[in-house]
Amino acid sequence: MSATGTERRLRQERLLRRSAQLRNDLIQQSEVLIAPMAQVDRVHRGVSWLRRHPVYMAALAAATLAFKPRNAMSKIGRAWTLWTMVGRFLR
Image (tube, rainbow, N blue to C red; front, side):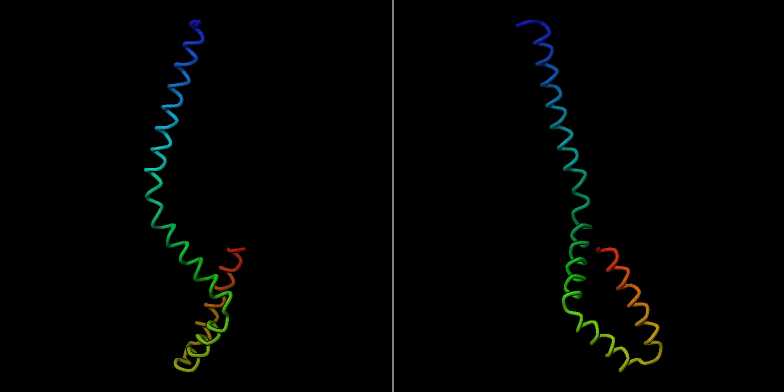
């Protein structure tokens, strides 16, 4: 085998080891994101469920009006604003 062929093989082996090490580092560093991403997934599932069942949102608004009429309209307005922002964000 020629000297250049040996050098190429050694370089390839070094690059493969370096690539494996970088992959392992990335896996270890991304473990920090598992818990926050699980929370994001949980919120997304909740919002999706509410979008499929809007009656529950209407029932919550009606209950708010019935039990706490003071400032209920402002709370409903804020909730509606939040709801539309989430809807735009998820599109």
